[in-house]
Length: 239
Image (cartoon, rainbow, N blue to C red; front, side, top):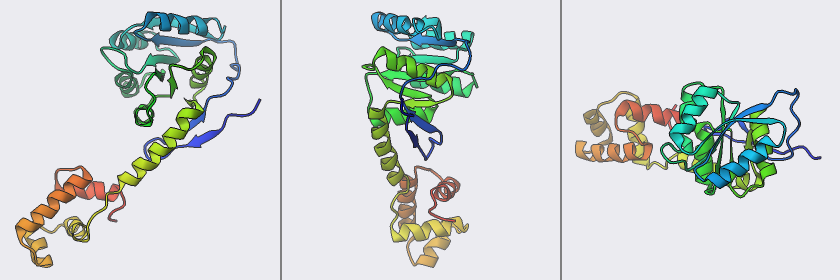
């Protein structure tokens, strides 16, 4: 059996994302405790049966909506929560955020019919342990749950390739293209100069400088001078 390949993800996703392969048997006999949440009863029941029949997993609770799922997670504190991405009430991302925010020991594994690379990226960035397509075989779902319980971040190969493209796209968009004038104004803002001082140094009207500053704010996604400088430093636009 070949070892699963690894993919290192940067820009907010610092953990390694491991593509799915055959799950190794746990090092001890302790079962992995899991909460399963999906609003389609037949699908949920099938997943629960598959996980329970493995002999390695104990499904401690089921839920059909997001609020119930979060309540079960908070109560049971399972090793893994297998959640539908589009749960009613609270969706999978909201639950993942709550689990990470509250420091719960549960690793969230999202499952969805929607597998666009932007959705997968957001799920992992929020703190999900992995993302699986709903069309995955039950054996793959079981393996993903066991891998998540071992501390791995899990993606099937067909989603991992799309994630690479998404990361590259976001990386290219992370550093906005500034005009020469915007770069000059950004540098002067960072040095602490006021708008009239910038206008005088660049031989521009104050209104013109204000227009350039507004464009600069829009490109950086900020609304004031301090935030503009901080964001520009984060993106490597100024030192």
